Image (cartoon, rainbow, N blue to C red; front, side, top):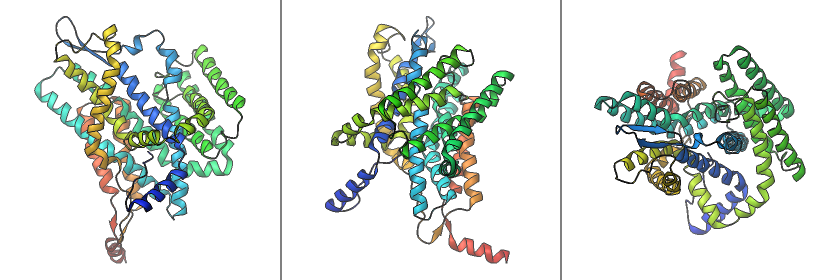
Length: 441
């Protein structure tokens, strides 16, 4: 995730440095990323209902999904394709900067792995502790499974995002050599995978689209960074978005895909790639207005404050929503019946409370999100094998959540593997490397 500029010296040099750094940023991308994360929080606040049945047992429901307009709303509210495209924009600019400073592909993979594994580790520690405590306390296993499945569901994102981010050096090279072929090849791959999955009924085949669909969305970010979308006229951008939506409609009407874009999320399907085209086109269309908004200091301050915590907000908001819902059950009259008028009217307050708590949680956890990937003087980067192994170890826990849903064993596995990944990524002593070379000689 893009980090905000921070001061580190005297006032005047700081101001000049901050202004120079700000001038190099695409503030529209920063704003869009923050809006995507906050929209995810809003959706989950509206989606999770916790109440009591006639016997006093806790019941978890999904009021938002029960609304007749929900499926249509997901055509605009499913913003994960845009999130991956924005990640592609950031990855391309970061990769080019790293190359200018002498870094290579393994430096990039190491940095991306650390910046995803570090903030994810405390979440797995929390789930391991809570699920372990609930199991020992004899809490209803069905209730524990329901809550763990819901609270851990966002973790799928880390598997998909880490995978395509680790492929950035290869993806950028393909984009530089033949950008149309790179984009078209990913699109063709996504179509082929979906066709095979639909024809055979084997949903697991769709996992290959973690590379094709999300790689396609990432490539859109490359195109946005290179200015292709900005060179299109407003009518062209509108037409591009309209054609993308019409193709989604065609696939839904043909019966190949669900009209609910959340259903089309895992495994990722072609409609999400098409939504990515429409979303980047519409973002480009709105960019002049958004850029004008981001000239205001208040807007910059708000976006950078949230932007420095996007991973923490994304990872922790669902556990906090569940905790807030559970606490309201203990307060007489504080928990309206899910889907009732009172429940809907209470959602804005719940949203504010959740953000406030997540903000408080982020204060001690910022060091995990802003983990340093620098190599101190006199030390060296881990070898390619260690970097690759760390990436695999970091990928496994969220992938298991994606496939099997979160439970206590997976939470414990996540703690162990993520900690091991971070240990493997630590800088090595140069003297150790020389000693090893001498020993081999």
